[in-house]
Length: 100
Image (cartoon, rainbow, N blue to C red; front, top):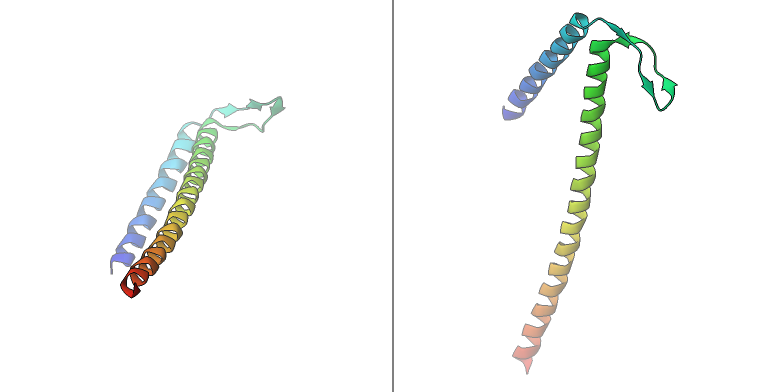
């Protein structure tokens, strides 16, 4: 039930975002050509350039945050392996002291 509500909420927010993007693009219809690193990009509406920049920034931010989470996950896994190894060593020491 909760998954269904989450998916519905995500779908509604996605539709709203697309709608806002379309309205923004249609209201800012001045043609604009951008020069990036000496290369002239095609002439598009100003609103479309802004929406494209927003999408590009969002995707790059998502990728960078995923990279950070991956690195942290590797660190956690490494520490978990070390803890497991130390617990096994501790257990061996406890059994060795009981036998003595």
